[in-house]
Image 1 (cartoon, helix red, strand yellow):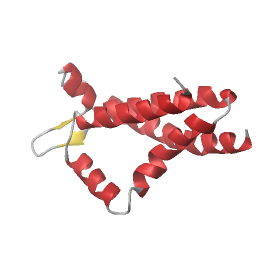
Image 2 (cartoon, helix red, strand yellow; image 1 turned 135 degrees about the horizontal axis):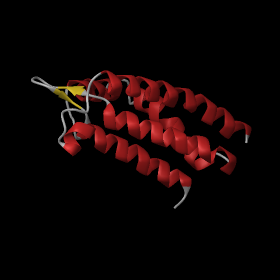
Image 3 (cartoon, one colour; image 1 turned 180 degrees about the vertical axis):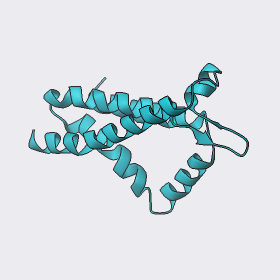
Length: 128
């Protein structure tokens, strides 16, 4: 399987994980994604798929790191509903003890790190 197809699979898995804890954030994200012709998902997920198809093999470790960061974010981000908020990790494990400050800090760290890897991946891909 090529790295590009692997990136499509990772993005698809991240979207599926987010759908397990569907709430207000997901509804807002769907509306925002549909209105400006999908520009937000293209900016957040497009570079990962582009790098998967175009990056040299020397960039693959950074690509794999970006994959892991994206999947961790998708797993631990809590989405709010009318009654409670839950993350996909909580939904999949059935444990309500997996929330709080630690998961919030982990989400913020992974989210920022993921967003920082995107420009590096694009630059590395274009330069390579």
